[in-house]
Amino acid sequence: MYEYSVQKRVDTKKGMRKHTVILLFAGILLLIWYRFPDVACAKVTGRCDNCHTMHNSQGGTAMATYGAAGSAWTGAGPYESLTRGTCLGCHGMGTNNKIETIGEITSSSEIPQVYHTDPSGDLAGGNFAYITGVKGSGASDAKGHNVKDLGSAFQEDTLNTAPGAAHAITNFGLNLTCSGSRGCHGIRVSNGGLRGAHHSNTDGQCNSADKHYNSYRFLFGTKGFENMGTYKYQNYDATYHNEYYGLTTPVDYDTTSCTKCHIWDGLNFLVAAVDKTTSGFCATCHGNFHMRNQIGGATSPFTRHPTDIIIKDEGEYAAINRTYNAHAPVGRSYVPSSIIPDVSTSDVVTCLSCHVAHASDYPDLLRWDYSSMIAGGGGSGSGGCFICHTQKD
Image (cartoon, rainbow, N blue to C red; front, side, top):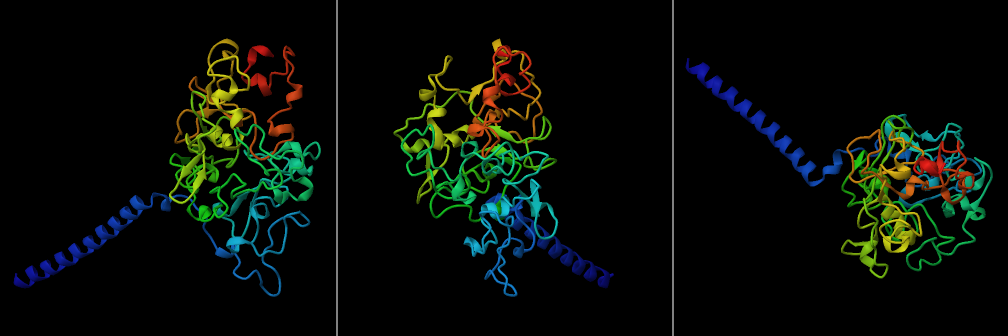
């Protein structure tokens, strides 16, 4: 009886210690999640040498190998952060695949391509290959944003400031980059860029956007929902597409106030849309095409096409097909937690309703040929302006 009681107390103490350890471990995990909520989210995984090289040398051969042979951005390195390629070296390999893989084949080794010849279509951001002419109807600087990694032949030689700039942004023409102070992705200061973004990446619903890694597609300060499931990175159809965040009323920006396009982080004024919308992000460079005091007031008739304005269910818009059209993406007045297959009367027009971000086969990054939009044509309404302006077809 005594031996049984002693053994029972010993077993009980062991069990209590075991449960204490489990609870302590669970508490630590909860604390980590609470303090760093994004550590459990999707990020780059796999072998470090998929993306990095310590000394850019192995067996006498340079390890900076990514990029299509002969392309303007394929070099020998070394590159910043010990990476094996530049932005376009990894994301613009020039192959016939819009999603490429490196190293072992896992979901994290799939790299979206912004320069490719894939005949099946492009990713949501468009394709820089239309600028150089390796895809599409012919080379043209006017088809996209002219990032300097495309090579000197395709750098901007016409404009010296962003079209529709709300204030003077000079010397922009030859210096566009993917990230950094002259780019779109990451922290937009000279010593910023994308450092740490791939290793801390949040995908799916990006509803915080207070860091570059938890912002929509690393566009610092921009909210949205990233399609990472079937047809990832694409606006494919009503079921599979990205979701963009917008407002229901155009913004009144004071172009003399830095706080409308910049956020102070204690060290720098970081470029970002204070309202965290897709169009607001574009407006950090193209403000006159977005601000209410520039587009001509809060109501029609406008002097410039408005953004962040509701797609009404009346007048010429009454006949809009309310099934989501991936050829004319809309903005939501909130950041959804999943993909929505239809268009409601609270959804809005954004810059990306008509344009792509990188480049298209049409001038000004348009999603369609603007010159073929013929009012009263009766039959051309399968796309373009007539997706929304149905009565004008």
